[in-house]
Image 1: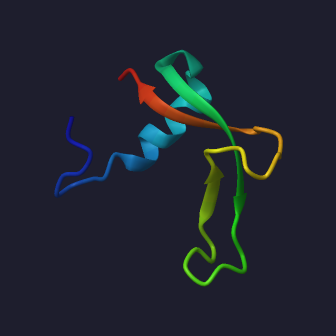
Image 2 (image 1 turned 60 degrees about the horizontal axis):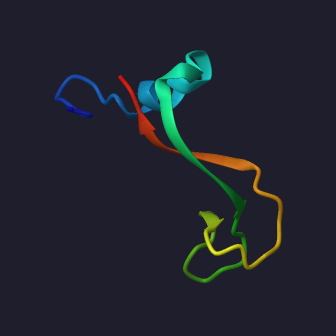
Image 3 (image 1 turned 180 degrees about the vertical axis):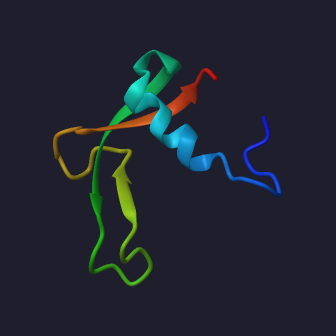
Length: 68
């Protein structure tokens, strides 16, 4: 699958597609996540709690497979 050409980047349409057609998503992870605002290496980045060390509720669905 080509995600970028000289004419257009398809990243944004692919990111938005599941909002309008949830049936496109075939696999996802439910994880806890937050935006890091004080970290020296991750400031402004989304940090996922893959190992459930924060005991926060899993509120994020991270898509791992989409059918286009």
